[in-house]
Length: 256
Ligand code: MF3
Ligand code: CO
Ligand code: CO
Image (tube, rainbow, N blue to C red; front, side):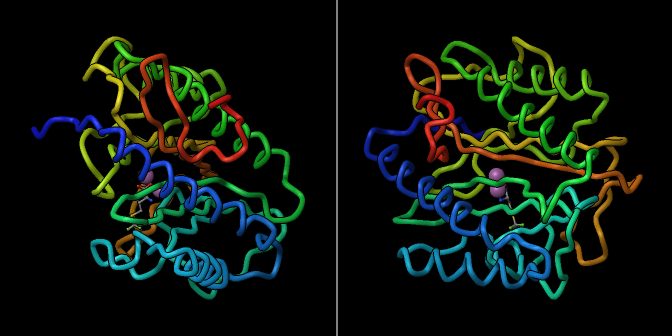
């Protein structure tokens, strides 16, 4: 198993830039997430924004993925392919942006409400965000990757929601997906030790119903088996000597 990379100060500076651009792309797209917009239109706006900022969308042609962002609607868990689908009031849509800038990838996603939310969608989206946040708060040097998964799993279970197990967070840097796989479930105190200079994503996929998923015949779109709603949030995180820095946080929400 290849070792988990410790990034140098120069690499961290470049990661801050790619992560900031990915986060700016999500901020740019937010006002366009309205009833009547197609997921293709959202794709094209993000694509243009990244190109205009001297970056490339990492998903495009990644292992054959045909578009520039992932758009996952309602019971779609992740890796939804943008296309002619028109978003309707009451839908939820996760938009996952990965920017490749100056040789480094920055990865972030967010689930948006389209028009006014239904009570169950609002509840799920709040729980999914809370799951990411407790996972982030578990990051500290000398802690363990298992601490992150355990706290996310506990939060999801507490709210009678489930954690998708087949897809994980990941190390990130010069490669889109690096070691390790960051599980969103597990046991505190297990797994690799967290060390300053490690950079990885946390991106729990939380279902209102059961955890089971399947992949559609398009070979990409992941959906819940029981058709229950699914929501996800993702940030790229740096382990610092004192705790963590959320590299894809534009608003200082995490005080970093
Ligand atoms: N951005 C996704 C992640 O968070 C990966 C998308 S891979 C793609 O890891 F090929 F579907 F774009
Ligand atoms: Co990711
Ligand atoms: Co992503």
